[in-house]
Every structure is written in structure tokens, then in C-alpha cells.
Length: 172
Image 1: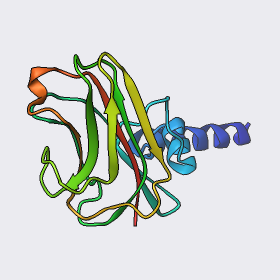
Image 2: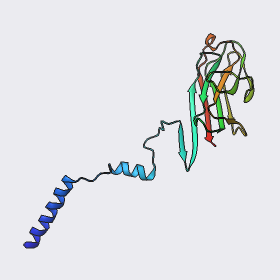
Image 3: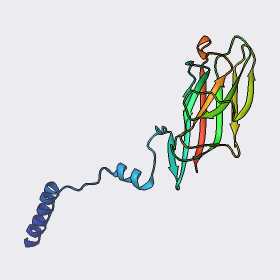
Image 4: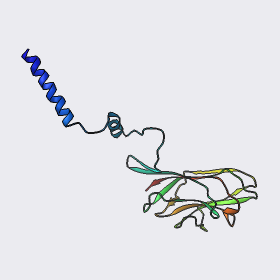
């Protein structure tokens, strides 16, 4: 009988201490995510991420019609040079007349450059176009530079293109 009272007393003391001094550390799910590094869900909200010490960027922007430069993406790693792995431009709408576009760099957003990264790409009248450059060897985005997509019109506002431009890069 004394053993039952002893065990009952020990259990009561443990329960009281558990209420007074609860364990911290979050839920089991939070601890598993932290330990395993899992991403809950299918969406990653950041444009940059790191795997095994390598820093990557994957960025998409909608085309705008503020000037002849319809898309501008800043080097996501600021003061570090970034290798350009993939560049993509998708014109979902078409232009009334044939035009062309170039992709260049500049230290200013939405600025055009006379030295494009890739040769001019022609777009026929009423043509929708998707152009992707993969594995762009030896092309880098210097610190604090922007990638700019420019259409060969005096102002992008006269025709409002819809679509996206995309960039994938690795911090060097």
C-alpha cells in the first residue's frame, strides 16, 4: 500500500512541475521541419535560396509598358557577381507591327544599353513569342547591375505587351 502512495506522490509532483515549468521548443511538426529542413507546402516565397552553401536565384517579372524597356531585374545578390544560368522572355500578347527585342545589362533599372547580352530577336507582326536562353556560358551579372529587356519601339506604352521575363542565376 505504501508503494501505491509513493508512486502516486511521484506522479503528482511530476505533473505539478510540468504545469509550472512547461517544455519549450514548439510542436513536434515545427521541430521536424527545423531538423529535416522540409518546406511545408508547394510554394517558396523567396526569390533566392541556398542549398549546401550555394546561393541560387529564380526570379520572374511581369512585363510593363513604362518605356521601351519592358522588364528589369536587379542582381539579387547585390554586391556579388552572379552567373546567368537561364534568361527567358515570353510575349503573351503580340505587337501590331514587326519589332525586335534585346536583353542587356545596366547599372540603372529600365535603362537600355548599346551592348546587348544576346543578339536582337525579331518578333513578327501579330506573333506571340517565347525565347529561353539556357546555360549562358561566360555571361555574368556584375554587382548592382540590372538585366533589362528592351523592345525596339520608342515607347512601350504605345503598345502594352503582356507576358513575363525570367532569370535564374548562381551567386559566385
